[in-house]
Amino acid sequence: MQFINSLRGEWLKTRRSAASWLCLIGGFLLPLLYFIGALKDHNTLNSLPVNSEIWKVYFFQIWRFMAVVMLPMGLILSSSLMTQLEFRNNTWKQVLTTPQSIGTIYLAKLSAILLMTLKFFIFFNIGMLAAAIIPSLIFDHQLPRDSFPYSFYLVNNLKILLTCMPVIAIQYLISLRFKNFLVPIGAGLMFWLVSVILVNTWKYAYVSPYSYTPMIGLNTKLPAGINILILSGVYSAVFFAAGFFVFRAKREVS
Image (cartoon, rainbow, N blue to C red):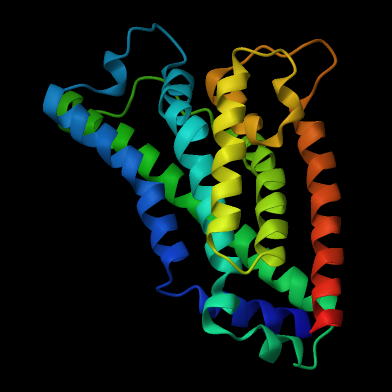
């Protein structure tokens, strides 16, 4: 119950925050641009130059730019913004003196970030489906001809979500460690930019967890035996644990 109350408090802090607006705008921006382009050119999902699996082609088509650019940048910004709320409001000492365990405080704020990420995925998928269905109803007067691959969309969304976890973990750790808002943002953008450059130029680019969502978006071929989902899980566990120790040390200093 204490964790639920703490999580509720963290979630209330995000209302009308920059991170919340970033989640809303970022989730619907790309589908909206695709939708406007479809209306302008009278294109529908049935217009794609493929004979089958048009939903799968559409999925990778619209997710490519999101996974390579917008999603990593959104994760970096939102994770840092939500963690930095206490620094900006100068309320860390107040939070740390409440009758909550250090683990509860750490997990509640982390869970709020994860819920915000999940909300972004929901917004993006709603927008993505609307951008595909509405033009088909307007111009073709019917739904796209292929049946919708529910399991494919669910599995691939979960894969992309899993590759987000190490980025969130690292950004959370850096944001807890440094009071200056620019440090986690700058570090995250630098890690992401270097990783994107290395994805198609260095066969060991998979050592960087910031490269995992771009790798999925670009459908990068990996060396035999390398599974970025497993690596995502390992990196996430390591950095979430490291973040907890950093946070605990912060409380002891405070």
